[in-house]
Image (tube, rainbow, N blue to C red; front, side, top):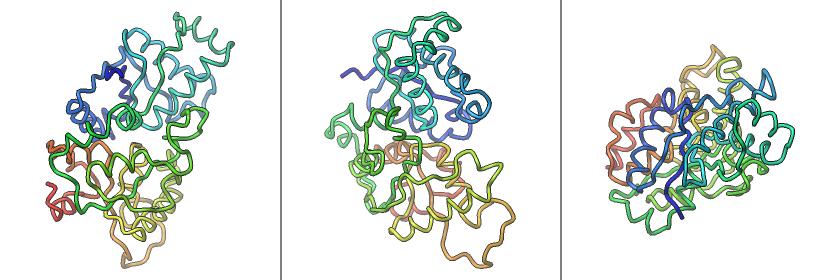
Length: 299
């Protein structure tokens, strides 16, 4: 299978998810995964377009699909961000099955929908387009002793009509598989697809703090040292909204009864296992992961 893909980085990889962007570049280089950035890509609209205009919510990612068709000799669009992936997958489904919408977009965007490009999560590509031997063969520093819970969130594998069931929407295993190849110990838990609060983090941070607090307690109960995710929104909420860190002025016990856990992008842990330098990137986390990694001899 070709290792050349159209690439949609999205807004987050250049801003609040810069750790995801930097580690994605390192890991893809290590795997010789050739990413061809979509020319003149635009925001997918995941943050707010759905609340403003249902057509715009699909038209924004549809334009990215139109732009991606300019890239020859590729059959997939690699998308690191879970929300961006969900939006492009939804737009592709609408273009494929809704004749009226397809006609509107072809007219407005001056293109003809080809249907040859499949929007895919970068996690899906890494796990399913590369052999176990190739993924594990790059490991130079196994993540021995690191206990993680894999946190997929709401959008990475659901709804299945968008995501084409590349993983089980209720009990996903893809990230677990990749982390185990890196040498980490994946701890069983029941919260891998629970919501973190998504874009409520600004206007209803009380809700987000409650949801994240529940996730953090469950991760502690599972015996985990850290979370691992493929979603920038999940990263932002879990990293910044664990109890006793930020959030609104809500009642809290004077003495914390648990310590906030670090959260990593799956590409960060892959880069560490591959012996690649992430010193500047790791320093950007709000819950600093370096003490944990230092104790385990991983940095």
